[in-house]
Length: 309
Image 1 (cartoon, rainbow, N blue to C red):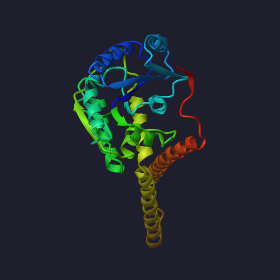
Image 2 (image 1 turned 45 degrees about the horizontal axis):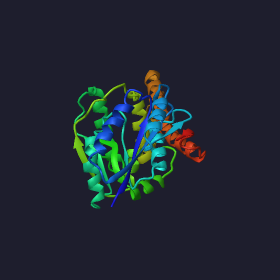
Image 3 (image 1 turned 180 degrees about the vertical axis):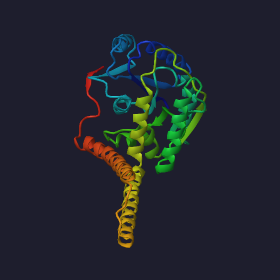
């Protein structure tokens, strides 16, 4: 039975990599003779020649489709747009920089076609080529999120995966504005197997992900899939209330017993500043959740397409 594979490729300023990616995938397709396929490139508001290259590629290959956003909406929006427009029985998500090895596709497709698995994902078992700080941050994030969330996220997991149509339908049933796909893929469940491989550096160009952007993305994941920060905030508030009450009781007892005022204004100021800092920290955590609620209730679209070919 012939199946159709949809290949979703979020792209932002990837003019140097798109043709290299396309050529690599075409080589893989030669070994997949019983698989129909389509490409869905999602141009996420690129400022280079990415859109021009996609248009030329579409003109020479009818299997190539693309959506161009009206501005940069982020990779999560691009991924959602691809899933929403894909028509295949099997759907895969890949990066254009070839850090997701296309040679794994035949094994991944075979795993889902067997019926034993609904999704075959990939995970990196090494981070060669990355800075030590970035690698440490990534490992810390996965350790933390798995401690505080009920959803298990595999350390080193990539967005690169082959999914059944049933699983993609489940993912699309979650049209939330604040998206964290790694968590969503885990949350919907389904039988998933991970293939391991060593880190591969970009084939060309530079990554658009800065360290600060990764930090923001990690915070989004924690807020989206865990309520523990709110528990920490309320616990800190309760602790400080008890601590302040006991301190007040000590001050009153000393004043009654010794009939003297308490000295040490500098220490009192320091305590006030500490308590104020705790309060601002707690308000910041609560504000982050309220901000997400605010974005959700406005019901803004996840992306706006300027061109769909």
